[in-house]
Image 1 (cartoon, rainbow over the protein chains, first blue to last red):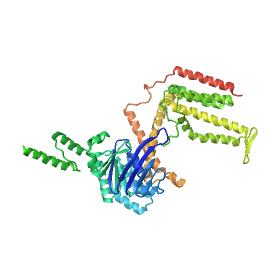
Image 2: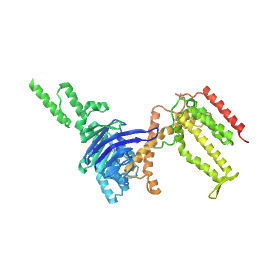
Image 3: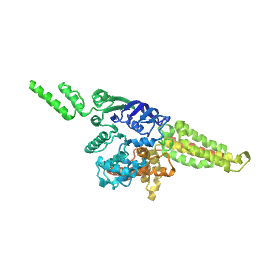
Image 4: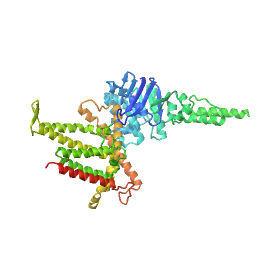
Length: 290
Length: 266
């Protein structure tokens, strides 16, 4: 589903002394099927933006369009539930939302609410359990007996079982060990490709944004600061520094290389391996020239 | 989420009322709550109202905070007034609407009782508006100190109070977070038949309890790790001290009480 924000603003506790503007005049378009990373410092409005995507909040000003659903300050779609069944959100620390007696029941909770028939739910459970890297013998266990990482996977499975067209991820790997982080991100990436999802990833990790996203939006203090392909955005070191964001390590390496050797290697999404080879050939050339 | 209720919402300030010893404030309010029930004529009510207004003015808490805090209780005050209007059958009949006779006694009674209500809430909310929760618990601990001789766990009680006050905002945030997460999994908290809506609370309550228990355990562990062992031999960062201004308020308040009892009709 295409997602369009037009002049969207959001103010918390409007008309009170505690009023606080979280998003200000935001415009962007996310075409269906893309993988978008939303990056920003704490308090830049990322989480508020994300809540617009499935109608948890409606904009104070402007218009949000998600497929055929439209959210404006005055109107909310009457079929909000339908919108939510098509936009799945994995919140920060999603393991906090677990509550059922067994893993299977918790995964089935979402689809049940959306009126998915029982047999379909069972099929979906069978499909999502291996996808998130759990085994089927866990289905009858209590989610509270599992480890933190496993609970996270169960919670993610619960969102995937809704079978959404749009997957919204709010720092899905926060607090996991490095291996778990990588596994989970790889899993989302595979899902994105295989099922043609539209994926929106809110993250602090520039590495993840660079690696998986095909479009990056950088927020600062509730407004859009930069937007473009990861290669375009992440090579602008100074602009990123102004909003206290780091450049991904790969690009840091290229910058450092340029500083030391005065040779610039243009970045177009190479992996560490490829860059190592480029540097290798440059150094070799240098040696043979002498 | 629930910012309409100001009970427990401290408004920082540096006025006379803010700087009073919390024990003074609690004592004065404690007795104020009692003497409100002794007021029974125009003069005695005026004395109390004047005292309350004087406190509010010196506290320099913006009126809109006070008014906002009163919004949820307006209904109760008006309801009391109407109830007395209908039920009390004393004095002369003032007017008759749809077979209901409104008596003059009812108007007076209704007005008096709602006024009491109004004053009570005004003064008690002024306490929480000008005193931090920590000051209040400190004061309560100090005031209950004599009970220690009877083996009453005063320090533990105060600690429980401050911990629970501290975690109210955390719990509110958590509630909002979990209810949003469940809403996006298709739970409908806002519409549908009552039975469904009550059922919808389960996915909210269970995670809330679990995280509260977990947090309690973590807090206990962190306290033990830092050598906490109850109030025994513990020194305080904030020492409560009765100052001149506290004495002044006490004297003033005694005058208010004396005036009230002098002018009330017996």
